Image (tube, rainbow, N blue to C red; front, side):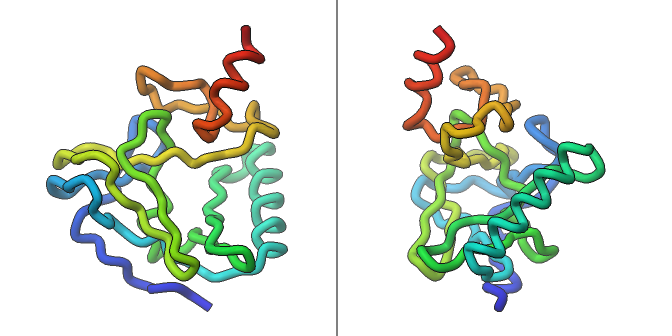
Length: 164
C-alpha cells in the first residue's frame, strides 16, 4: 500500500546540500506553523521496517551504497518506507538547530515549519535518534549548537555528561 503518490511541493525544491548530499530548500517564504510537505512512501509492517533498516545499514558499512534509511514511524502497527521516487521529503536533512518538526496523525506524517523560513533556506528537522548506537550517526549539520551526533534533544544532556 502506498500513501499519497504525489505530495504537494509548492513550498520546496530538492538540490545539493552542504549538510549531506541532497537537501530540501524553500521555494518561497514559509510561515511558522505551515504544513510544508507530507512524508510519503510504502506502508510497511514494523518487521519489514526492521529488516530494511538492518540491510541498508549493513550495506553502508561496506561503502557499497548510500547509508540512507528512509523508514519513518507512522503508528504503533506500521511505518512508511520513504525510499521511493515520489517522496522529496526523504531529502530533508537532520539539524541540531532545525526549522521544522514532524507530526503524525496515525495516517499521515507531516513536516511542519517551527520557525519562519526564508526563500532559499534549507529545511531540516531533528531526526530524534535514540542514545543507543549514537556513535554510528555522526552529525554534519554545522549549526552553532551541533551536538556532534544525530540524536534526539532529550539525550543531549546525557551525551554531554558522558563526554566530560
